[in-house]
Image 1 (cartoon, protein in one colour):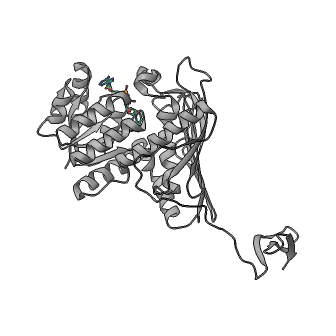
Image 2 (cartoon, rainbow, N blue to C red):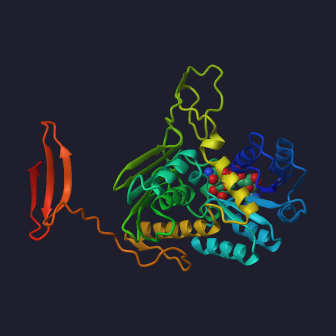
Length: 396
Ligand SMILES: NC(=O)c1ccc[n+]([C@@H]2O[C@H](COP(=O)([O-])OP(=O)(O)OC[C@H]3O[C@@H](n4cnc5c(N)ncnc54)[C@H](O)[C@@H]3O)[C@@H](O)[C@H]2O)c1
């Protein structure tokens, strides 16, 4: 059983607590840190915590705390991680790990040097749909992965600090791109090095210094391409979609809107619909079990199992650091308007990969480009001559 100290009593702290206490779970949130006494007390009452404090270190160091869960604004993650390292407490940190890769690397090193368990709370790499899709990709159902695209777009976050570039560290690229980058990395292969990023970012709507809309391409060393689309200006709820294309197949995932549960209401009796839903009347897309469908349940199960078995979880501080390095390159590219290299002073995956050959032999003299059945019943081949390079077609 884990006795968890939650740092932060806001939006995600509550989602995490709902998930940890869900169903008949034996793990408990036993302590809460919040800046304001009233928030700490309210959270402690709502979730039955034994201990609350407005002093972060006191909550981390509390003798009952077996694991700390960081649900604080981005600019406070490092301070919290360093305190966990100081008190040798296992630590889980929400996304993004750092505001920059430099910050994330310091956190990773602090955790590794202290010899404590570290887990990166990247919930969207634990949704039931992602886990099922990843299993198919790993089993080879899609062949070699060529392109992995992920989109997170919604009308913007709910607390003031997100909109302040100093506290948040960035706009929608950092806030939402972190999910998308890790999703694509998962499908392409976490041991494949992201090498370059080309990014467009702009502030199209909101009166802020950070970007509120961005699209980027992430090139991987094996020739695969990742793509992310992020926005804080999207209208209509929270759009969470992934697409994977391989030499043998395709996957489309829709995690949140239009997931198969559609409802119309005039508004009578309407209440909460789903995270970031903009309306509670008309046609709606409720979500069956939000904490499960967003990956929180599978995520905490993996984290607790990993900590207790002495193994790494599927999402580590190292993963959070790699994601931050891709984000840093995206910001540089959005300014330079050039492909920018991903700077990874620490890299633990494969090195020196090249794009594999995909030539399919048809016979001694030809490569097969395509074979198809046409609407007039012909079985048509398109071939390339190995010597002359000439393209031809024939019926078989
Ligand atoms: N899907 C996800 O994984 C997901 C979703 C939302 C937020 N998050 C992440 O969770 C973190 C918190 O976001 P949130 O939406 O819960 O924010 P929030 O504003 O709802 O809650 C933040 C909490 O931290 C406290 N806090 C605020 N400023 C602080 C400071 N300077 N020092 C100490 N405590 C402070 C607040 O009192 C509050 O309890 C962020 O890093 C965010 O990116 C993750």
